[in-house]
Image 1 (cartoon, rainbow, N blue to C red):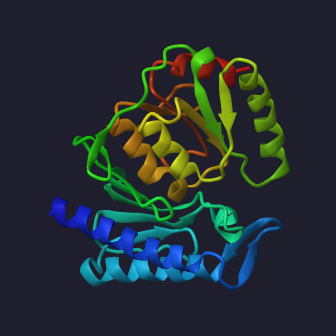
Image 2: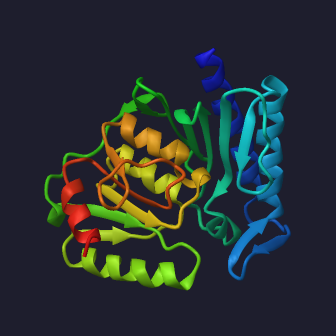
Length: 256
């Protein structure tokens, strides 16, 4: 059964990812959620592809997705989906966005798949079985000092959250090698998992932003918590991920 879950998630991520890639630069409709959070009809069509695939195999499973109301099923399994994490990037043909698909069992994430269609990079992990990039085992970096670390962050929608994270950004900026803000939390987390980034933090997140990728980080021997170092679930609004070695140093900065 677990192999069926993994194969379904990977097949669906690849299928929707190809559709998204083929839609880059074409004409599509743009909608707004709030004042500045955009969604396109490609998000919705990609989401339809994913949910149709899941429902065709597991019609009794629940589905939590970014662009539609939750689908409540009788099964203890729940799929958590972001059809395009990084919609603003996609809408501007900036090639840093991905498909994110996670599977929960009784509220615990047991499977995570993140696919970057522009680079054809498929990240995935199963609980207790390690993390992989295109079938190659991945692990977090070995950086020990914050001063040597390459970090990433994101700025969520809403001026108050942006203002607060600007302070965090400023506190980290003079204490690290460099910081990037690329616009896709799921891909940033996967980059922590494969050692490209040493750490990542963000606030104002949703379950579909982090469910799949947070499992990929932990299965790559990284650490994912809230800002204060306490336990994290995808339903928490703040997330701190790292290679584990610099985690306590990042917690200290975020507590300022």
